[in-house]
Length: 467
Image (cartoon, rainbow, N blue to C red; front, side):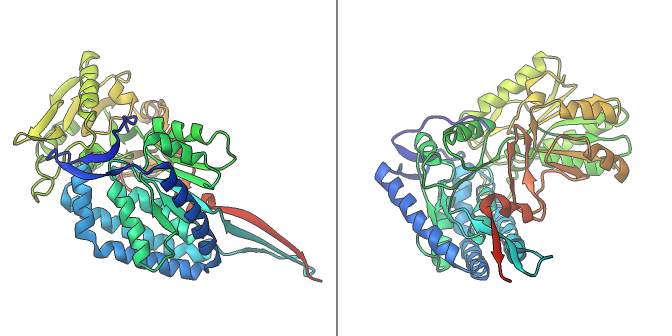
């Protein structure tokens, strides 16, 4: 994702299709920040006193409260970041699935580990809550990036201060309201709307016990620097430059359909979107021929219209960055077969055309840097080794996909791919039973799965002599 831009005296969000103001409120003042953090300390004590079973019941009620407001929440997401309304409603379903999965494994995952072997000793490992978790989700999937932290944090016995992206602030309000509606103490989950400078100060505040940030690599480094004087963990879910490799034995139709969707869903504004494609030379021309009509079929328009399946670009400066990447690729020898420039729909909105670039050299920016837009750059490769070398030659390492009929090939490659998730015959997906984690500059720490509780708790050793 792009680096943060400065903001005015108020938090103001424009609708990326209509240009109208979708959300406005004053930034939190210093006294307001203090009140939220002081209250969160009280909330953390209340959460720690609850049983895991009671926390599970609370989180399930909060999830149901969010679901009851699906139409309003989806409309707010569409207005603030441009996601087509049907996809925004679908994101609610994904959010609920993740929440319920984490609730279903919480009791077992947080259970004490009992060490036997000596009847005179009681030895246990306890997973104790950290206290106050500062959650800083991203705007591109505002419900999903929030639920990854909020629900597991509360399940583990923490309070949450939810500082959502200034592009999607209403989701922070919605999570706080859902927990209030579910009967949670008012201090347990609170929304905080503050500018970037204030956010960095909050990261360094002694009342915060853990930070979980989702966003750009640039933003992750800023958050890490803000915590430099504190001995706390900072979880970072950052950008990706995710590659797809189409092997010579791939199911071509399935590979083309999956990869194009992986590159263009949510207008390409996904951390794990397919951002570069390496196709075996034996499949190369056929892959391009099959991809072109799929890209042409996207409908840009009002995201509230059921016919629209590609919404506008959320951030106002981003079309310039996408256009620059396309121009750089063409200057370096790539061929532009479709798209490649900013667009509007009926004179409205900031869109970027779905774009097909072929014969893209590896030194082009579109192959080496995160794009965060509907770009599909393709290059031929000679064999698996060639693909591995190009995929790993990158500073980011979030996901990669291998498209092949041979499970053994996918397994061999998975052992050498320097990424947090390896897919076979799928991409741009997240399973809450598996850890979501990045390698290299794509971040550190994990969310979701049984590992998702580890960074939200302290291990405590119980060592009693009882006989």
